[in-house]
Length: 373
Ligand code: ADP
Ligand code: MG
Image (cartoon, rainbow, N blue to C red):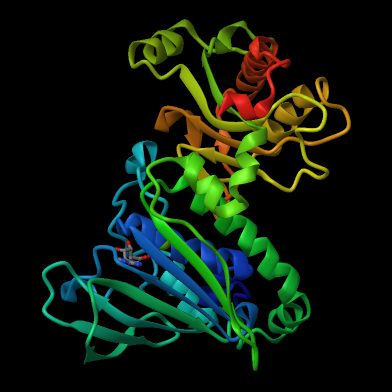
């Protein structure tokens, strides 16, 4: 008798969902990214009991059309991508159609209201664990979408217990992630609050739909923070064939030159390379690839190394957005999409270090920071 059998569908769904939604961070990230993808200019994230009881995200984005209600939370249903090739010129945060489906599997998830641009009324949507639509009802609502995730991991006892134990730390990690979204999202008002049981509702931070990242940073970290920062604007051409170990063919190279994909720009803000202007700990360092917040340990290391040669005792504030051609990296590396594979990373790091050193060298260290702004 054959011993190899397929896993039953419901269990497959639960196993896979557990990889997409690994913690509080992934819930918030997926929901905020959905709001940004929907073109929202106002996003409110409300935590109840640090997220243990509920996480609610309200936006004023495009809303969901009634024709999509049936499929919205089904696995691999998405409005953002239809073939694998679309991945190479992806403009949205989402693309796999897994977040809502996974949240149905691992929490009590529902869409509190959604109303599309031309929709006459709002609709509330309830789902089964599989992501199938269970029922709808009409509610009063403004344009946009509000979703709620209650009792995260209620059906995964080990993870739920772990979350209960670590929720305060998790919540602080989420705030750091939200800081990054708030700083990069120009023209978007992002506010975050937390209601603890029997306590007051506290506003963690709020931005003002500012026209630039500098004002976003001032809203999130305080206007004083800007005094220690200088603008970051590094530009270089990548010549991957010149770094050791590269085996790139001439044909490949010319294709890349032809489509202009080799120019890299890194823009943002960084601490002045002067003792006293950095921070005690490297807790304010944000990295983005084409405005997508992500973890780039090697890039972070390169920045910190160069900074240390000017200010050995402190760490810099870093807000760095790497602007690359969309076919020069791969976001489809990990289920939570936070790890990004940069093609030609070695060459990029080399160029980054050189041009950052040039920037710091050119910076007149004798000018007091207050006069620079
Ligand atoms: P993905 O973002 O990868 O497409 P999701 O499961 O996160 O997958 O969402 C499924 C679909 O639901 C999205 O493609 C989008 O069309 C719709 N959607 C989700 N959240 C929102 C929102 N806040 N506003 C409008 N549409 C949304
Ligand atoms: Mg999504």
